[in-house]
Length: 483
Image 1 (tube, helix red, strand yellow):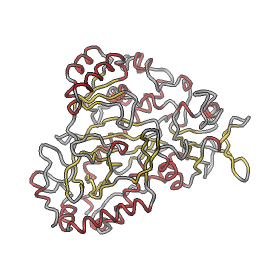
Image 2 (image 1 turned 90 degrees about the vertical axis):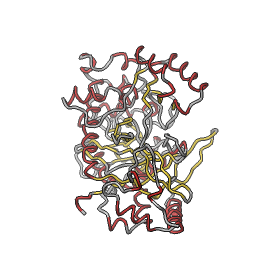
Image 3 (image 1 turned 30 degrees about the vertical axis):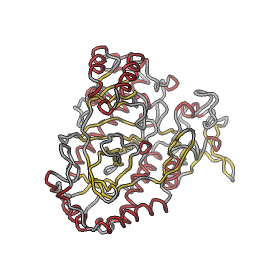
Image 4 (image 1 turned 45 degrees about the horizontal axis):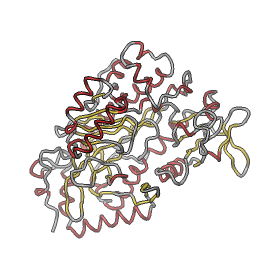
């Protein structure tokens, strides 16, 4: 029996593909008509083809349970998420604006701290930051850019407003899955790419390489760019190896690199030492150089910070960029945009309460059942409380945590995240989604056409992270005016 889109409903929610009564949103008519034409058997066959392609291509992610690392096939839904280019253009502009201001903020913090002196950003917030690196004070990275790769998470509320939920500026991941999702969709629904003007994402590796190469301290047409990974047991190792392969760069571990007496970084090769110009690091700050940070780190390179400080190697993202990857700092991004760029923020923040502020904290504690509580520096959906889904025991636990360490917690009202049709078994049901576009900053700026749409596969869940039962979809930015 074919899928009946008139039976598909997401009551009280904003659905990305269909409006009330099963009517397609702008630009989505051909896609809905095509999906409507498929029988259950045909749709199941396409789903099976996608799953086989994921296995054949080795697209995996790692889950850690009870001390064990388990590789699992990437969870993927074959019904795409669609956004028109007309709607995407202001999002693109807003992301560029946001990352530009964030880079200026980071650079300011490691130099004159004007934003603090002018009382726009609270001094105590910086003093208590776990990601501010005193070792980076006074360093001038190439082009003045600290966060070369940023992944900003976007959500849409029930009224259709797109908000920035958070900015990931340390070692943002997920772009490899965005690229592989597109490859899988082209294999499963090739005809749709003939009927639609779907804007490409497969230029990301070349854009990433160009952005990294532009940081090279040596004038060269082909600088030596490497991807630094903690190793095969890291949860994002698939992505590390994938991006290195796509860029034609070497994938290295700390033991493959060394800093010599000239304070330059070299790679060990079978032909001898080869100088490295740019390191795309996928290792946390605290492990990159045992001479400066964790002295017992076995995955870093002794002397790396010295080589970077002297301008002999470029690091992306720069150490210390994580100072802006803090959910308490996130609350001040609109003010940063106004302060540094003299512009109003194009993309709004989700309203955010800082628990370090006594008045705001009292409001949060009195309204926990209507709030989402997040620790300032966790990722992956860990350590958070979704108030309306929590038990009284869980809410009481978070009250104690907030009172004990208020700086470490923020609160946001529970948004009714938008949904999109998702194949669950043999049924199409609404599931909540977010979107992580990726923004590159080098000599030029680049924003992916869409990004990684993550979907909460569990009914009613707002947690989209793959480590907690989430999956993903291909994201189509469609130029309807060009059709």
